[in-house]
Length: 194
Image 1 (cartoon, helix red, strand yellow):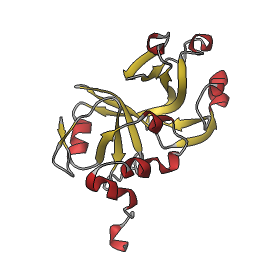
Image 2: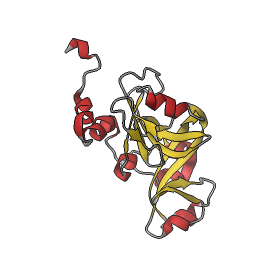
Image 3: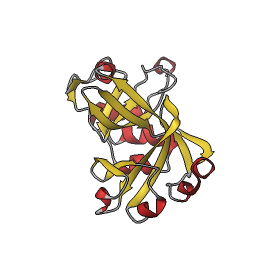
């Protein structure tokens, strides 16, 4: 458990949690982002940015996978690490958690190996989104960033991962949070101008 700078309460950094960039996070790679955590261990953490679609259609880069991905059928900028690689986040069909090439990380949500023949995937995956690159943190780095107030840590929903309202995702996620955190959904970029 990591102390949250805003509330002082302990937060659980685990797969399925969302990191919402706070206004104090000025790194251009993460300003106004929503990051889905996919793996958190003592050695570090890995996630993907959910609200940065690119204009590049998946079909142009990964051929037939373009027919399988969720709308919009484009690659998403998953983060600044390994941007020449792709991570496929999928929602397994009920009973498909043990399908070839699928590794569950949070309930039925998991990572799909894109080297798996597409024929083996059809019917085992309900939803799919592909990310170019990922966000990564070394041991203790994410915990330190949360403690200093760079991230709000909140529970995620499957619809956050696959929704088509990526432009409004950060605001939508903040709005559904309890207490004072919901007020940040309408916070101006510079409160001093209010």
